[in-house]
Image (cartoon, rainbow, N blue to C red; front, side, top):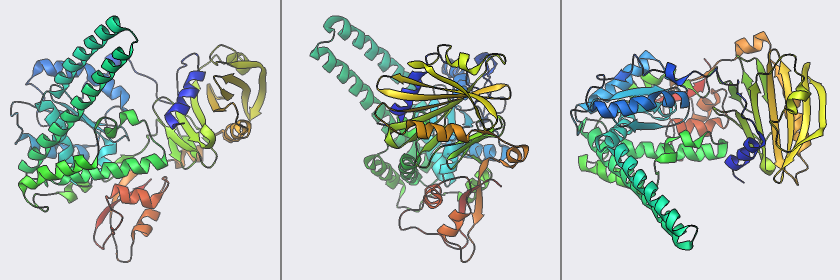
Length: 488
């Protein structure tokens, strides 16, 4: 079973969607406004109708991707790349507004009207200005070709066709075949849009004086990144570039073919030093508001709590909750809720938010000095352990799921719930966010010794190679500038 399916089982256990307070307090959409200080060449004025459509989506994008990431040094570097690309744009009347999103996911996308978005996670993966230019030019290509509006039109047509097919043919084999054809048509349409945007973007990148082969290089970096992520544990894939952008060897070959129109490899500038200077100090991974994953432990400095999962489990700190998946199709979910201070935890468990609850299993207990209650539930071939813990004025929920046939649920659940603790003031003060730091390779240093300097991450050498686009036969040399991850 996939990690996403396992977490879906846990989500199904929750009958009521309680407010999560692991994340910062939510803000009404109406209070979100487009940036007053966007990274932009000029504020948008052209295509005002399209810009208004995009403006309506801007608050939702900020809410989904953690808001804006503000760093003047980084913004100047990105603005310089955008400025160089706009001078050779296929649509000189189009102006662009680019926002750096405070998300560790690797993504970039465009909305009609010139709204461009790029995550700090993508900036951490890129290695020079030419690669950044390739990504931004690709998204500009979508805007230039009006792909957003074209897709909306086709989706509307396909939606109408689907309704007609369903109304006329019902659930017949002919209806199913027609619906599949509609989906395949949309998928092919999306693929064609991506390839067209690739061609437009590489042309713009080369004409702006950047290395046109950067697009192919960055596609290879993303392929290495997704391979690393599939072993280390996926974050929310729906928020990642690779979820919506096909990444295949054929696409890389097509990118290189477009680049060859400008000459052999080596043409154009990479502007690596300027780029690395811009991302030096860039936040990497989770923010203090979201808490930190350090190995098999989750620690939240602002809430002041921590818990650990057994070896073999992988923690994912997503926007909805902290989750973990492990051997034997087991899954764990952690979140927080507000309940009345005078309400007993046993009563809270019985309040209707747990599907398949066994009321006779509820028992009061204490975990590391904190009031707690535990219970069991069964539903749809799964068994669940529910632990709720009161710490200060907050109640935290730890839910562990395993197949009904598993004999490991109790042991794993007790290990996880027993690890829950309140952090001391010294522990909270010592927790610092991870950042990208650019260092120069000194004589005698190797990839291994450089990777060993990294903190707060697993599989250090593999991640070092991915971040620095070092292939299987690659190495580092004295004087090279490389990226490492540290909390300093």
